[in-house]
Image 1: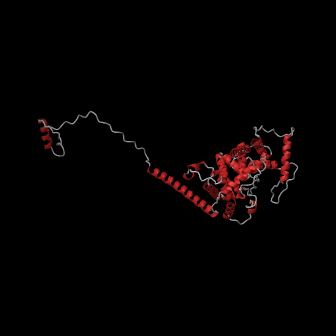
Image 2 (image 1 turned 135 degrees about the vertical axis):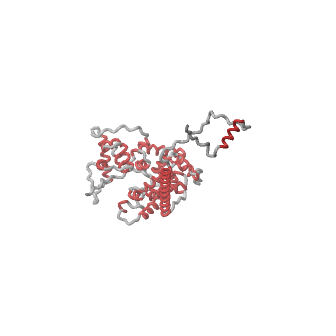
Length: 421
């Protein structure tokens, strides 16, 4: 019995982009598929994947959202659907025009909250990148030069270690610089990148099949770098030496004064060069929330450095600040070896802890009493006993009684035998 293959779905970021391009909210899409808003949010963030009939309906709806009206959809030799970029833009504009017609049969959209001018511009530009170049060539998307696409590596003879080393060599230099901009600490930046790649090596089958492995590692590195538990470590209680240039010190201080979510949004959008939908998806926020964070972060940085009011200038200064520090990551074999050693250590620790708990439980069950033993009651004072008299001379009666007792046999008084009459 053969099982039919599952319907292919676009990546989570593309699902969200298609929904926002069609001007649909999560509630409206959930009503069309027949699920809840929370389920749609999980599908778009990549935490869960639809199955069965819901997957078929969701895939068909996404295909209809991404397929423009009146455009023939070509089929590739592998059976995959390919939509030309110009046709996608044409279809998007046609859908927008149809939605604006008063006689359109679509359901009216719920009123959106009031937006500022800057936020409205960012939300409307959600379908394209922010225009800034990546912080470094290695920090861009992996679909470009440097790392082959997943379709190109399916038939290659690369071993998992070689593929991991290629990803590490491509992404680690830029990730160390980005982690330094997030934390302001050089050692913590290197440690964050190494821990992220160690986690990627432990989950390499999952990371290797991901459409954006560099983004997977970047998200893990950011999460570790921004963890609030680092403040309790003794080596991170004291600040590190700031940059040498006064302008770089001011910029780094302005970045570190921002909340972690604002700092991460500013770095991803204006530093790395991600678009607003990708930035919102990686920070697990809505596009409107990411736009507000980005605007507030820009305003805070511009308040300290007025010349950084332009996003392009912010990108240039962030790149210069990250490049001024000589930050180098460890070699790929060392990272893989440390990750494997750490995994073995924690595995053995977990096994030893489990064995200890089982042994203690078995010993307790063996030594525990099998029946109820009442406790010994506390002692009480005996009352009514006459006090012992002090020693003194014996009376005549006492002396005769003593003589009689001494004359009796040692075993006791004589046995009484009845006499016959």
